[in-house]
Image (tube, rainbow, N blue to C red; front, side, top):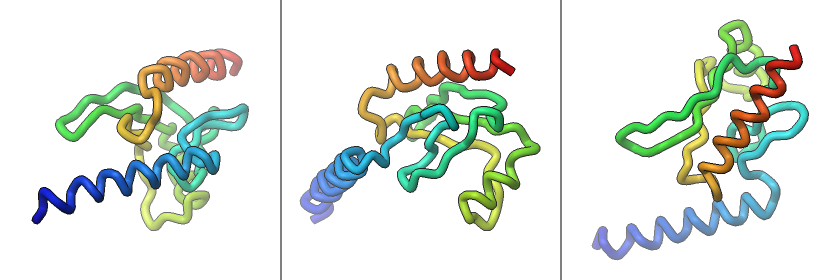
Length: 115
């Protein structure tokens, strides 16, 4: 029974992600900052301390670490109960994850050097 239901869940989730991308709610960056979730919440360029590649048991992701002084501001903006020390963009959710990560690192380095 599980073998019958599981593929439908995966297909449904893939359709959900495609719909979000078409609505412009995928993972991207602009002049202000990086979108960290499918709701359109951002971490601004001046709030970022580092961006790193992470490969774990559950998958691969690009992890954005804001400076510790900005955790509370981001928490308030996202309307969460507790602050988060890092924000992970899982590669399974991104269309071209290698390109996304490499280009994001380049843009962040350019933005951080302008300070």
